[in-house]
Amino acid sequence: MANEKPQKVLIYIVRRELRLTDNPVLHHISEQLSRNQTQYTHLLPVYVFPARQIEISGFLSNEFDKNQNIGHGTSKSPDLIESPYPPARSVVGQFPRCGPHRAKFWAESVWDFKANLESVGSGLVIRVGRIDDVLEGILTEFKHHKTGIKCDVAGVWITAEEGVAEKTDERNVFRVAERKGVEVRLWKDEKFLVDDRDLPYITPKDIPDSFAEFKKAVGSPREAPRKTLPRPNRLPPLPTFIPPQLAPFRVPNTLDDWITGLLKPLKDDPIAMQIPYWPAAAPSGHLYHGGEAYALEHMENIISSGAVTIYKDTRSGFVGEDFSTKLAAWLALGCISARQIHEYLVNFEEAKTSLGSYTDGYGRGENKGTAGIRNELLWRDYLRLCTRKYGCKLFRLEGFKGQLDRAWKHGDDPTIRKQIQDFMEGRTGVPLVDASLREMYLTGYTSDRARDIVARYFSKQLGIDWRIGAEWFEYCLVDYDVSGNWGNWQYCAGVGNDPTWEVSPPKQGAGSEVQEEYIQMWMEGGSTDSTHSFGSVRP
Image (cartoon, rainbow, N blue to C red; front, side):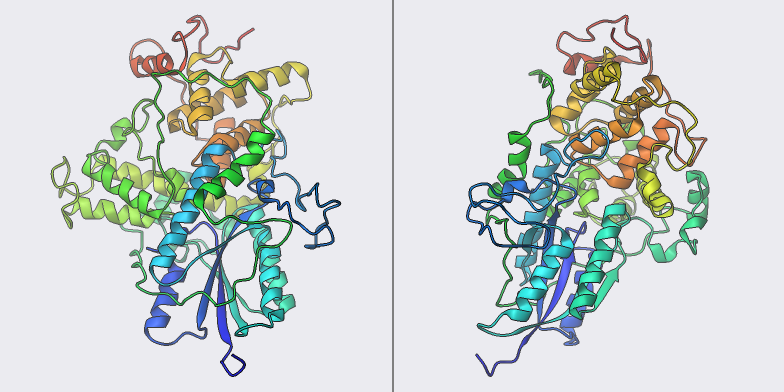
């Protein structure tokens, strides 16, 4: 062993790019390996469930040595283990940052990525904590590891993201690596439709405050995307020594145990509320499994079913499985990229594959349905760029506009607290709003149209601090995305950067049959009180 050459380990910190196909980091590594040009012999992909964004106290170890220190605090007693991190709760409403639906989907997606990496000769080390703490622990363990083959760290690679907390993590990774004498490479995030290198903006301040102007500058969404990158055939193996999880946490070895650990804090300390009743006739609109394999399977299903062709006509629906693509949860975690979706659409439009050959629109070029999907993907791109431009203003009451032009109501007033509680429980007295809120809480999903209506009601009709509503969505939704959720709430609340954007109210009377069916489905006894119109509040 002493005469064996040290293993040169490249650490790849995985974030929201939980896929093998169209993954620029893994593609680059695979290409280097095939040409025998790697400066490293082993690859250590590491995924960290981040303590700022999801509660990890369900993984505290009962065998923690009270004298162990991870740099942020110590446990006072081996029988009463304390987390070194504050609870992962929202700033204004103090809700858990991640609810049960997304926690389960998140764990499934990470576990699927682990299996995919193993299929090409690598693997995935899953940890909990703060990314910089985990990295520091790994670098320290490699340096002081004495038994077996020595491991030298050849570098750390990580993909850039736009969120404020995410940027903080990146700075901390650079800080830790610099202190340890290790180089860091920051990769561009390529899960979006238009590549950053193809954007016509030199600095973030050049990004326009109008989606229409952005679309004009980008050009045709059908022509803008770059080609997808192929799935790697082979990757370097894991090092023979894997640094352990930092105390006081332990990490499980099965998906079921990961899900149990993530859900445990939510069950032990539930939100104080009356749980909405789930009517027997109300199905979930999002019975999907996390992971790349499931994302690709779903993409194929919505093409073969013909849903992509009729998307433009159905996207404002409320009931059923096919009125929306339902791809957002996988997109948020990078289980599938926007340009992969685009490629599937092109193959369908140009009959490049047999997928969807028996459905309307096959081989007939872009139609209003496929164009509508691309437009929604471009909207996701735009909201992400708005986060880049405005940074922490994404979470401020005055929004991107930077103006407090109204007197927002807050939860320190008992009457307003009651309204917030009614909102959470789906008991506002407005049937369509209540139906959507109940569906969202119980299933983790509600339609885009319903989300806009609910956000407009909470912020403009009730006039309550819109951030509380955005935080509640963050807790409930399985497909939460930081830029998408907070950006859309800003627009609905009227504090976004595009003054021309407005949410139209729901239909009343003729043409609202689908809404009534939806209300009947989710509200026990139907619409409860037909005298309550949109915007009214139950006394």
